[in-house]
Length: 184
Image (cartoon, rainbow, N blue to C red; front, side, top):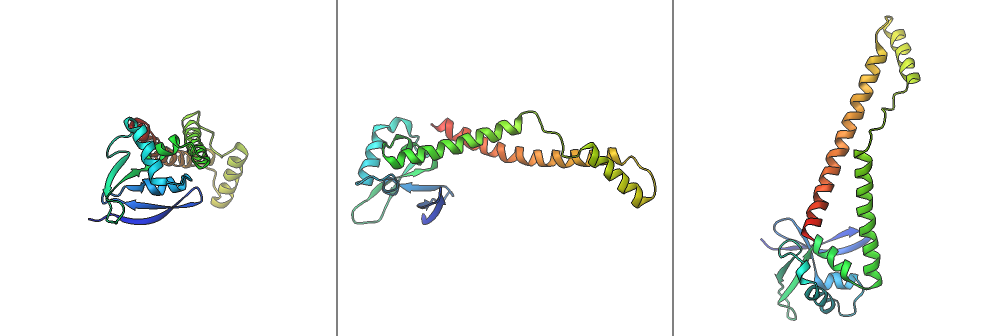
C-alpha cells in the first residue's frame, strides 16, 4: 500500500502530511523545517535530528521514506511525537510559538484531568427545583408520590452518566500523553 499525502489543520494553519499505510500521520523534514521558518529546511531539520538522535525512537518518532524525486532518494519523516520533539529543539520564532501551543494543550489536558478527578460537583438539582417538580407531579398525577427522591435519583443518574463520559474521553487523552511522554 502506498503512502498518501494530504493537508490537515492545526492551530489555524495547514500542514502537508503523509498518511502511512498503518494509519499514522507523518511530516517530512522539509515540511517541518519550512513551518519552523528555516531558509534551508531539510538541512536544518536533519542537523537537529542528528544532533539529538538519541532522543528519537525509531518507528515511534520517525521513519525513513524512499521518495521518488530527482533530488532526494531518502528523507526522514517524523510522526506526531517526533514532530513535536523537533519543534522543541528548534530555536526559531516559529519553534517558540509551537512550543507555546504544545505547552497550552498539555496544560489544558492536565487542568481537565484535575477537574475530573477532584471532588465531584453536586448535581444541578436544588431543593427548590425538587420541591417544584414534586408539586407539578402531584398536580398532574393527582396523587402524592415521593417525587423528591425520584428527582434526586434522576439528577444523580444524569450526572454520573455525564461524568463517566468525560472520564472515558480524558482517560484516552491521558493514555495518549503517557505514551508520548514514555517515548520521549
